[in-house]
Length: 462
Figure 1 (tube, rainbow, N blue to C red):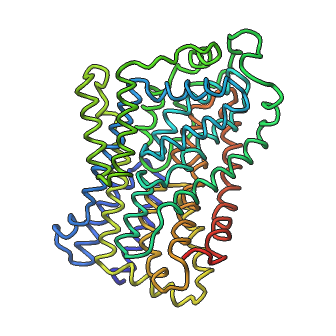
Figure 2 (figure 1 turned 180 degrees about the vertical axis):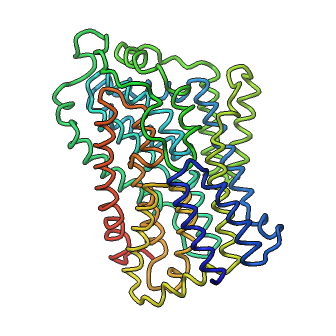
Figure 3 (figure 1 turned 135 degrees about the horizontal axis):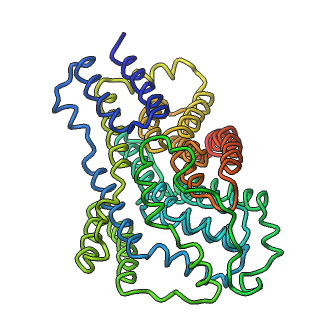
């Protein structure tokens, strides 16, 4: 067997193993890079280590450290309470507010699983206290995290844009971001009306309810039960869901209804200033995302050491290992020549539009069971030869593949979906799991073909 075929087979085996067993896909990828590189391709160890993405490592650590601090000092919780207060407690506005906050946090750099872990307990608290359908509020969190997931300073956006730049393909940050935002916004709008949005419009506002005491929530068992996320971020996600959002639902809704609890502490104000400063530094002054985020995080840590104690431990280290490991393996694939090999095989099919649709479905199906960052890190480079032929618009194809791979994270087998199952309130967990599984199956079937039909088939993007 050739080194190219062996490397592809090893990649498939890694995804299967990471799906069936609680093993970090990034660790598997590092082992695969070592074994395939040395045994099949005769690479030196230094060549393999050169493929490790040092700059991406700094981005991941810096951004997740900053948002660990924002969670520790209550800044994220304050944002949720302030946003609900701004809409004057209107029940129908709460799901869109949750969607917008989720999108905003991922757009400025927070990893989607971390955002879901932070916001899911808070959002389900609102749902249980004010009889909002748990599927509605949970899917607003899930689709919101993906709506903002491809901004230029986000983790997924950085991965896709980096691969595009390295392949010397034309890219468009705005198209990538708006494509994901538009598809997930459309899905959220459908979810709103399918899962009780019309009833919320009729019920009015929080102030119109008798008193300000929330209705008792239906018991749903311990938050740690339910299926564990696939991939390898479950341990971090789980810890964040308990420490970042646990026990805030009732206090939050009462504060919102009465208009209180919106005073910022000095450190929260400084944290918000730091996050805004990060966005300005990266977008306006083109500074490095990772180094700037680390700088802001260190400044915040120095200004309040006690408040930020333990923030480093809450960095999403399993996610860092996952992404860096997969990217390292892809670098070995490129060194071996696997990318060119796949490109030649794809060209032999002779129907570029069909190949594009198949690639979108591969991204959607695999991502529903495994890691979005992992599948994007592998599929975008493998699609480069097809795009280099010029028969398909690279901007459209990369946007369609990104949307197909990310929108399916509502599956209960993905990290985000599993976090929803673990934190649900107001509905029996098994019932919620079955409904989320059915919804995820629909998205897996419809999402890739919709992205392909809108972005790729018309040929309107270069």
